[in-house]
Image (tube, rainbow, N blue to C red; front, side):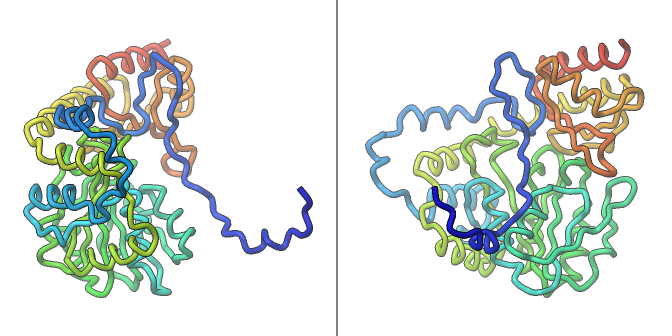
Length: 356
């Protein structure tokens, strides 16, 4: 290829991309690094996959994802016009960033949180400011009563697992009537209190959730937002300006079926919570310290061996957890909650690594 000039590179949008959790392509793995659900989706999802008429794939899908949106609206007792569906909560959040953060004022979010937030801000050229967490990983709500172009709070937070009270969230929303406040509730179903009841009180509040964790459908990529009709309309306007057909028909049907199966949803969530609570006891016995988790993971700091050494030793044993070599959190491991059998294999390995 003849390179006539390198001038085109000066116009490239350069960013430091988000690094997703490792997806090992080997067998006999204990995968506790990306907060996936260890149990399969609802049996009703399997029924959809088995019965779907493959010839329908020749048709474009419903651009409004009506069957999915209606199912979500029914489950959460809101209007369908208050629901936005996207290809995973990452897609939903990215569109929300693009839609609502258009001022020259900085968007604010914690300094320790989902690391996609600053990536989106860089991609979309959105000014932002990261607010330091308290030493116990909680937020100081007064730090968010400042001039801003928008606010993003993950609740419970990731990777810490710390839950903020609804009173704190409402205080921040109420004190920022001129900004859109996004609450990212990817992990809310594992014992936290949702901010969804506040949506009816505050037009500027957008609550985002996902199917990837509590509904065991990370591979199908479904996320959604619930907010005022005005917020959702603006998001749809942006989405339809980019790609009208974002979600395939199988995904729409499977998402609706999963949302309707409340019994299975409760059963699997309860199993994960029970395993999490047992895991807290075992990790404490092994000398770990951690903030209390209301998620499907535990953010734990070993006291006898460095987190990096444990991460590397576990990987040698085909046990994958998440480690960030970053300031403040470099002494922590984020451990997803697996099945009881997977967690026992982890604990046996940890005991071997720590105690020799």
